[in-house]
Length: 630
Image (cartoon, rainbow, N blue to C red):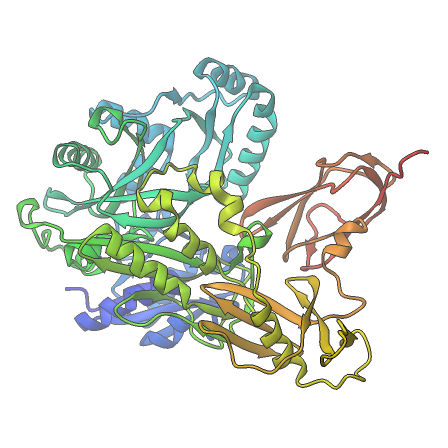
């Protein structure tokens, strides 16, 4: 058995690996960048090594530094986690050549499945069904456009070296293809260093089914059943569950059997996931489920498989990397009950899920029996340099409804401050009738997004409580704008009202004493606070005349909604623009965000520059609205 490992990753997956390693008596070494010097995975490990600046390209993605850290600390093996270098065949090869144990599949297996076009060809040869599309070497835009026209719209453009939802674009009509291709290639080049793409026919009612597989160095391969990851936003998984709703025994045998064939086709060793797309319009049928790709690593959603099977997949990884055979045969594996996982991110659903970074002055996560996988603790921070995941919340129950209801309740009690989170969105999603009866496809969130992310209307009691806590029992002579005497009625006491900023909007409320409404939590910071109810935060502060909120947009001030980098500027100073026209494209967390003109007007001031970093709230440009002619 391996006696010591270095974890070439960070955050919750590093903490997850450390937990199993400690239980097995395996010594652990963490690596960290400048931004992660005080991170939880650093504190939990037996030893930690600094490997460079905050940017992943100068630390977590530099294989030589990681291998050197393993040598310096006497680690026998390297566990890559997921993301970063976990599916980098050259790094896996370098680890092995350095005399270290690679806790993962063979480099040749990674190469075989790393490029989606080559992987699909290999699967076709192995008799695994694949989706119709274009896998050709000719990457000329005209050729790709011609192939898309032949396949028929909608089509999916997908980076051949992609993953995590990056480098993917759905194209609904021919006229949109060129712009979507350019954006997809640019994002793929930035994320993976490879801008090649493949095309797939878009399945109208798609479901995302994946199978957990394991192989060992003795030629054995098994599956640990399937997961359903249909609920996605921008191709990023949101809710995952196991088993898959509506999966009968015959279909399960066919799909999981295909996954094992896929593993054996590449002589697979270690943990992997074979992903399928299913046409869910007529339920799950084996002849309507096609191979998409294989992830040659441990998946983010592996805890739901652990919860229904009772197996520790990290323990399996370490045993297999040590040369042991698979812990169990296929006949010895079974599952019980239902498990569900929600990804809690530092993002703001009310502003298009823009990432939110900063210090976690308040971090309240659910307690057992909810399983919480996290890489942060109170007073830690969410860095702008990496994935903004705060935690994974996992529940298990005797059936799907029990797991779903428990997970919704777990999301209710989540609180973070001043960092935003998506707990309220998750709660609504879990309680949506469509999800409850699983009449969903991968487009479910997009189709219902307005209802799922619309900021809730806080009750008068909540606003009054917030005003009282922020301002105290103000006297009637407190000058405006803090409080004003309004609503005078004959024979009654005058109502004292005050103005607050509620998520950037000015609102008025009465100023009355009272206890916190049931289920509402208040966290104060400076002259502001956050109120949380059922996972939804109401951010409140004292109203100021110079406060920027909706008024800024109404006046034509185009502000950067998050810290990031300007990818491109689509207009020039003095140019006339139309409502909805693209103005500037930003990049944050390796995802692109496009800002458009709020109305017809003229660009009177332009501060945005391509490739320049910008802070949240930075004035990118000013637009003067076109005045109607008399």
